[in-house]
Length: 239
Ligand SMILES: Nc1ncnc2c1ncn2[C@@H]1O[C@H](COP(=O)(O)OP(=O)(O)OP(=O)(O)O)[C@@H](O)[C@H]1O
Image (tube, rainbow, N blue to C red; front, side):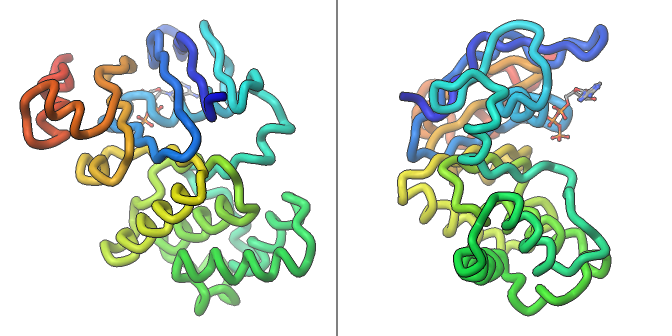
């Protein structure tokens, strides 16, 4: 069974073709990076995977279940690009709110709250109101919420935007640890330097999948030394 299947998916917004015949599978226990420039359809693709956006053609499945499917969504942690946080509540209260939504028991919630706060370096700031958080702190709290119910699949839309390099490094270490437990992680980024941290890459440009595979396979195929060069060689610079 695949963790995620995207089958011949196309999407238009009015006359604008945003995704065209995208087809791939994601297996359990891998970190997959969806890489591409701003506006190329990464967020739309993620929303289609989750069943949050309607498709024009094709279908998406998570654990063999056609999406949207609410029972499967309990196994997924999703960090959206725009932070959906309660600004008037503290970080801890936000975590408690989402923990209850996920149905976590009190003792599990307390233990997971402490863990996710430590991973995202928010332990000291948990009792502050979110309205007083910086942009980077809000991103980290969104990531903490996505991790809270220990999901089997993590889907993270630009998780390290606004996060300083030291914490970025430690978040990636933690994501590797989560992957090593057999969990599946999908990350979008337009930072090509983050590509090397992923087990597999999906390169998107102008709504088309232009390359798919490991970074080493791609660099070998195009006989280049960086993912940036793969991107250009695979047609990323074309209009
Ligand atoms: N609900 C919508 N209605 C109309 N157009 C939309 C909608 N959502 C996205 N778009 C358009 O679809 C295109 C792809 O957007 P999307 O957010 O998927 O790109 P992205 O690759 O995630 O970009 P970024 O890296 O900047 O987040 C953009 O041109 C965007 O304006």
